[in-house]
Image 1: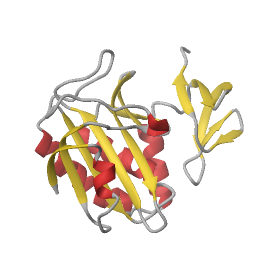
Image 2: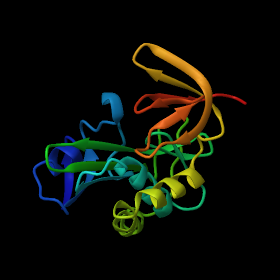
Image 3: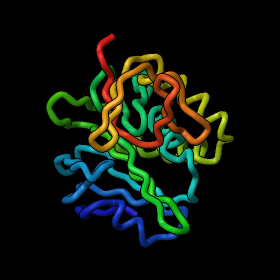
Length: 199
C-alpha cells in the first residue's frame, strides 16, 4: 500500500493483516523508539512499515535486512539504529499487539537532519532490496540472525553508556544474548538508549 501523507505508517499498518506493507511519502507524526520524533521532508526518505508475526528477534532481524538493503558501508547500533560511520542513517521501530508485530523502518535517502547520514539512492530500488531482505531474515533461524547482527554491529567491542530511565551504566559492550539483549560488563539490558563512547 502506497500513500501520500500519513500520521505514521505504523498507525496505518496496525489495522492491516500480517503480510501487509505500507509505504508513505511523508509522515506528519513519524516517531522512533521512546516516542522520539522522526521528521523528513516529503519524498526524501524511505518510510515503510511491515506487518509481521511476533518474533523476539524482529528488531535485530530487521536491522540486518535494512543494512543488507542499504549496502556494505552500513553498520548497526544496538538496539535499532542504522549507522554510516558514527552518523545515523535510519532507524527501526517494532511495536507489538496481541497477535502481530508492526515493524517500521525509516531511512534517509536524499535529505538528513544535521549530523545524520543519507544514502543517496532511489527509494524504489532500496524498498525492493529491503522487502526481499526482510523475507530472508525475518524467517531466519535465531542463531543466524544473531551471528549476522554481530558481524554488522558498530556497538560490540566498544565502550558504551547505556541509559535506562534515569540510570546510566558505562562499560564494554560484550555481546548480544539469545533474545537480542545487550550484555555490558556482564550485565544484561533488554532496553535502553546507547551512546558509543570514545575509546
